[in-house]
Image 1 (spheres, rainbow, N blue to C red):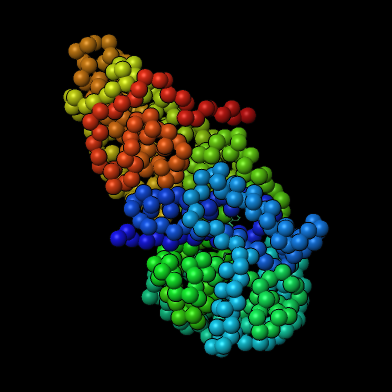
Image 2 (image 1 turned 60 degrees about the vertical axis):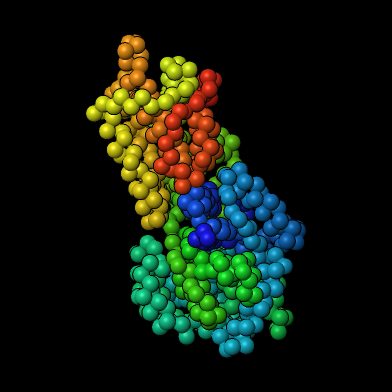
Length: 507
Ligand code: MSP
């Protein structure tokens, strides 16, 4: 039986249209999911939308529509965006889905019945745009630490989750599961800034707005944010029913989240799971932000374009490649259209596209498109063939460490070596002398073989481009199980290959 792998993105707020920051997390999750599938895992990849709350209620009011009408339109666009980005999710959950609503109500009631949720009174400082409550000490210059706007004091009757009860257990869990939070700096931040100073119980219901899941036993309350949002990762599998899907996929192997919601995923979510007596996800990875002009790309600040414009201008794989390659995964990085163009020209056009088209053209010109391996080797070949032997092991290792940009760098290093190999072996000189025919064929074969192996791996990252390359090499076995396969004869046909990437003008 195949080993399972369950990976999630955060469920995004459909309070405004999605931007390149949402694409960033989703593209990375997609590349990991594809890599695992190609490696033979039974993958479940989930994304979705977090649709309740005051902010969306207010936005809908401004737009003169119901909250459901408001989010429906944004979600239609989001799904179109994911399809155009080739996001291979297995399930898209919406927190307004009937099944989710019912299951959240059951979970809330269960936690209440067992004493983990109780009724109290909430007094706090609230930031409306971020839908977050803050303590005095968390404010920066008296303002919301996330968006810098004013907060207001609010008092109301509310239900609370006994988060404080889980402080010790969480600390112990972190100690006994050193890989639970990555990168490790985020784990230290959680311990030092939140857990050790003491956890307060968490407000989990509101009476001041209506757009949320009602508490079944006290209808003036709606469930506030986290018990609704975080449980998406298990309601989709059927929980509280212990379904075959739940048994198979839970616990999740990886929750990918932006750094600003690491706290919710590594403190609140584990505490809820502990209260439900369920196993915890194996890992939460908190990645950095893509920033624009030195600041966060933000729906509230409105400083972004519809990512579909970048896809239209530069192609889906240019956008995917940029997200995966540009920034070391975990750190913040800058997004700009200029950087996207530079990266596309330098790597996709110059290193990959030119190599593939040059090599195929030589295969057609010198061998009528049928290239086998006469095995006339030269010492120079080892500069390419030796590193190629280690490629798969190296990329596997980088992917298991979630060093996505470094995984791509291993592949592009081989492609760079291919270009150098062409310069060093000078096939056009070999072609002048019929005596060198077998040596020339060995050179072209080695290049095709290296491109073939790189394209197999690239399927996880830039699937359209990888498919085109594998199709032109007539490679049908594309799972990683076939990675070591030797192709006896590459049949390229005799049509000049179309350019994979056109050079983009830098102005
Ligand atoms: N709804 C909550 C998450 C609930 S998960 C149970 C939420 N939604 S959000 O719409 O604000 O999306 C947050 C996520 O989008 C971030 O955690 C991150 O993964 C992604 N990003 C949003 N802006 C981003 C950048 N500028 N850069 C990188 N990722 C960004 O929080």
